[in-house]
Amino acid sequence: MKILCNREELVEAVSNVSRAIPSKSSFTALEGVLIKTGEGSVSLTGYNLELGIKTSIKAGVQGDGAVLLSAHLFGEIIKKLPNPDITIEADESLNVLIKSGDSEFSIMSGNPEEFPELPILTESNSITISQPLLKSMIRQTKFAIAVDDSKPIHKGVLFETGENQLRLVAVDGFRLAVRKEAIEVKDDLSFVVPGKTLSEIQNLLSDSDEEVIEIFVGKKQIFFNIGSYNVISRLLEGTFLDYKSAIPTKNATELKIDTKILLNCFERASLVIVERLKSPVRCIFDEDLIKVSCSTTLGKSFEQVEAKIEGEPLEIGFNNRFLLDALRASETDMVRLALNGANAPMKILPPEGDSFLFLVLPVRIKQEF
Image 1 (cartoon, rainbow, N blue to C red):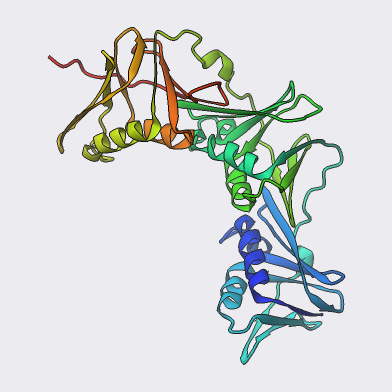
Image 2 (cartoon, one colour; image 1 turned 90 degrees about the vertical axis):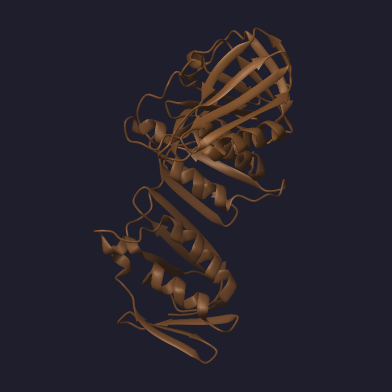
């Protein structure tokens, strides 16, 4: 088996499929990238039994074959090779010779037959959506994915389709993110994709409006067709939060404000907060002013910003990081805040409509005398 290919294309392909390859595994074969020859191309696959990524690049090929190379070692070698072209040769004993210019490496291949086959979807429903749109939807929800194992289903994002609409929902017990968009979809679906999978999908998605992604959903697996990349992942199982019942229906206090102004205000208030000195950010909404303050043993901060406030005055506290994450994810020049008392979560929405909705739970604050 002999392969001649472009170094930059190979480096990019190995880097991307390596996202599905564990650095250490009790099953050594999973630490490798599987390289197989095809007609005028070579395929590369990484798989960790939960997430698999496969791609192909153009190559000059002599003879059929496959090798299984340490993803880390092979990736480091090809990054540092001097010439734009690389030759990879493997003999019957699975000795692999890698050449580029005057540089040459000889490494051993693992047994490619030990590499597990990627799952195949026998029955599936499909969704087609533009790549930049899905990229935005993932970006605006993944900040609210749970990181602990108390309820594993919440370590993913809920996908729901119905009434020609796609909704993505994430929740971690302290905040909720909902992002929805109108798309053409035939079936009513509900499934949960692991957060780690979506992070890798986001890295592969294009910013070009002309590019689309095809998603095929099975009972336990999901398949993403992204240009030259195929990604397959397991789905999470369990009962996801009934998020609709968690969203307040009444708003006693509402306002619209410039996102950047509010974000900068909370960032300055957070300067006196560190991990070992956690303290809520105190917010007072009254008389067309938002008064923001924080007090820790490091110091105190106070600032006020103007905003047209409608409804009842209110004093409420929030975790600063949760607020900042939600504001950064809004991606709009203005945001609309809706509150219903000091003990109810605050809604953060776009200035018009509800293409996204973020809920942030309040934190109890000590009364100042």
